[in-house]
Amino acid sequence: MTTALRGGVGDLERILGSDMAQWRWDGVHRAMFPHQGLDAVPALRPLFSRSVPNGGDWSTVNVGPVAADHLYEQRSIPGYRQIVDLSPANESRFLDAVGESGHFLSKHYDDYLRDWQQVRHRPMRMNRDDIERGAIGHLTLTPGP
Image (cartoon, rainbow, N blue to C red):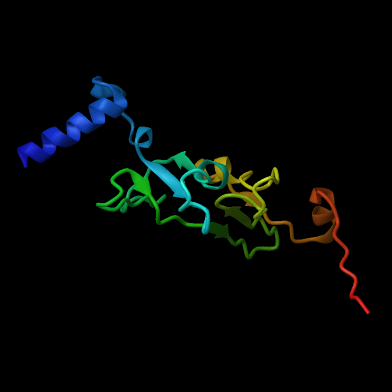
């Protein structure tokens, strides 16, 4: 146990420095968002995959578990969070983990990532006026012949 403790402290000192009072779990713990197909290609990983510092562990409200083979990487991640308000006020909220677009060149590819990290939910637009006010564009689909 002493050997394991010394090894762990040495590892953290290399990463976080020797002042333990300044250590923070999110200084080593990262939430990993691998691209489902291209994360396996090391040269493409920086373009397609995302990761952010994150707190939490297996027993916190903002769950952030790690595994023995990835000591500081959170790979089991809540991809979507939702709070449903059933009252007439309808203050329902949601949060997607990475972004709204699946295209890595889109500005919406990872635009929700910081909100996910800071657990900042977005309002769910449920009435037409709110939807129109918040729209970034319109897509019209017309059936072909």
